[in-house]
Length: 426
Image 1: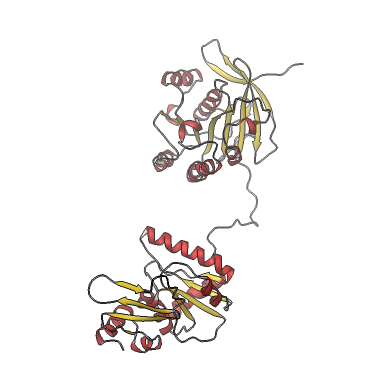
Image 2 (image 1 turned 120 degrees about the vertical axis):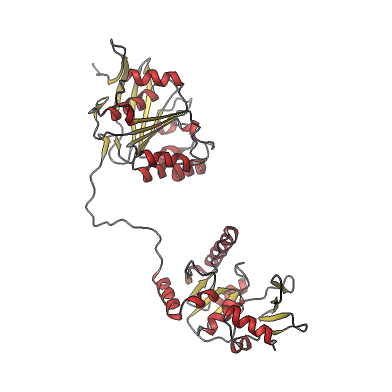
């Protein structure tokens, strides 16, 4: 028997009546300060008096799955804790089991649950990050052991557990949650494959598209920064052509330079003929790191709304191991790709090559192969002679790559610098 105070505690704190408590065999301990919750393999005790709640059971004993009188169904519900089990049973769902906290399932529990075609799993919501992580691990454990027969029902965010749910919602609402669970849950937006394929939006005709990430690699001093700076100036000035390709889009450029000296930047921009200074925001050695406080740089980019972002160079913009595939994949997925998604800008990432003599631009790219795999477009500036290089278009997701253009960095009589294609003669 339970004392009147214990019965009232269950009634007013958990909404559980005396008939339900008796059906589950809940009774008082001999000293009347603890209640006994019978499990298949032993008892669990709960202190519900003044002060902090406490639990006790025989050390090392696996209690099994908590349940009351069962009905024969093709499905069952698996919830967290004794009071949630009793409350769901009280609401009319008899095929319900409870696990004593989010600690996963033993093999014997799995054998019991495998008798059902569908197991609906309802775990607590919790605002505490560590507890939430523990619950997610428990769900992963349950799903791995029960397979696709396990279906998770997620409670509304404004309730913590089953007990709180039925204080605010009805059984009809719970049935709707079950119905949604049966239909399956989709977390991502699929493409409408019936839509008309959109046209490619080329920034640089046939080379760089709007919203793409381009990798520009080359040896030190080959002219990579001249290439990216000349494109930035052409876009900012609204020019119709860059080197030899039509420039189809103009606008703001956000240039992040963690490599070149301060005076060199000014001289090169002057030599390249920058006129529209308002269209170029140049961040020179500001300590931008894509893997540290990336949110600050993202705020900067979103506020400026550029059409092109240049990152010079990759090595200076992070603290990860470039030979680690996971680290590089994370850098692109969590930072660089986010930049393109949030701003719609094309991104050019400058990077160095290895010291080897490989012919493949992929192999020559320094670090993990994931760097080359992550981008939409790949360009390599490969030295031919002082002031001259081959610009190799080695990767494109939109067209056949492989084009090679001879480019010369040439001083003009008026003191400017131009990048122009070299006409190949035989």
